[in-house]
Length: 155
Image 1: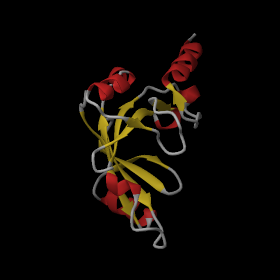
Image 2 (image 1 turned 90 degrees about the vertical axis):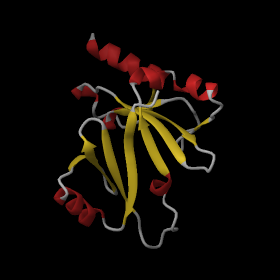
Image 3 (image 1 turned 180 degrees about the horizontal axis):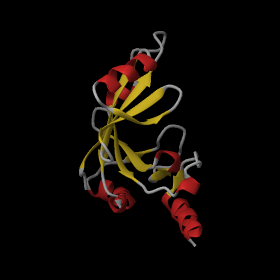
């Protein structure tokens, strides 16, 4: 099921300074928002996420205890069955209550989450092809809803 590393994360104090540093290392930004930047390590395969945190925040930062493994789209569709077969329980992501794999159209990826025995956050994640006219969709959606939208757009 696991094909490689999809992403790793690091907390940073100042996102702008860190962006310049990683650009100097020769990495190219793949995605960015207000307090997060993702740099390609291997274009189209793996990236590094930088998460800006304020000094006043607790020393724990989710990026210190999270990695994502790269899988195929088809494997991700079967991920709940695979996790069950190895006796691993998926967990909801963020504010979501569902454990089902979900798609992030505006980021061009899909994922499902679970924890290791020490509570480290793990993720199975894949890239998805997003038609230009759907890149604006920011809400997370189920595979079924995503495939219905894509199929209706392609007609």
